[in-house]
Length: 282
Image 1 (cartoon, one colour):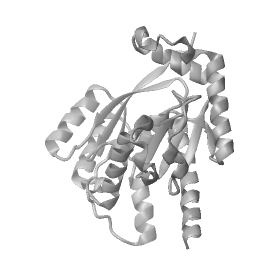
Image 2 (cartoon, helix red, strand yellow):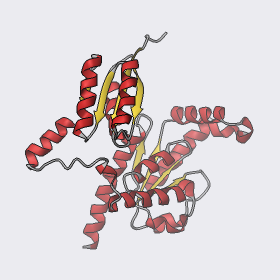
Image 3 (cartoon, rainbow, N blue to C red):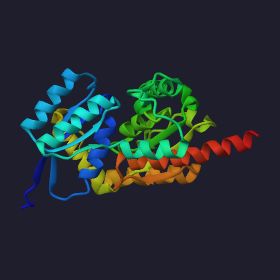
Image 4 (cartoon, rainbow, N blue to C red):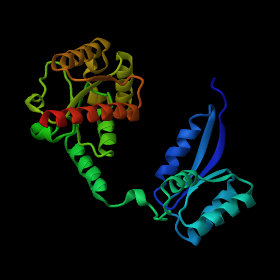
């Protein structure tokens, strides 16, 4: 039997979406074994009335309070409430702001949600996401060279979520399934701009994911038993390796990688690819 988990209340108070808080909080919590946070997320807290509701919740379920509030009056009020309730209350961006202000010698603007501005970078990410969704699972192969990255791989190697993650970083990513005895789109060979990269995983990992997939859906949709056959999966992996070797395409084993780690590796390859393209056209 597993060890008993220790639960604690974790309150995250933000005047924006709360994404920054959740990322930091989960990264910190992951470093402690047998500890589970009961998350209370309060986004878009920008008024005294909203903050009063948050304080009531904290008093009802005391725990660690993390916040990102640009408004000094709201931040001060939350800090006072934390002291009154006897709970730690931390502005996670305060040390970062202090370093920036000291080094850059400029004042803080106090702009709420500044990282979500509707600027050129924002619209570039939206454009990339639209492209990625339209080019999921081999759809619309005619304009593959408009992609920044084309991700190849057999079924259940997390191609789609990896591409979506890349799109959220502004990278237009298409993905194409590799199926033995079915040729890849001819446009792939004609592509000159896109980075083409493939992903594989161990036979055991792919088999496990596919079995879980079958359990989550109607068995009638998977009458073909070869979908989880180890020998068939091994052949699919072998075919993927052969295709990459023949074309000189990089290959990433995602067996023990998270989607974020896989995407980080692809982004590193993409930066190198872009640099090489720039050098060749100079």
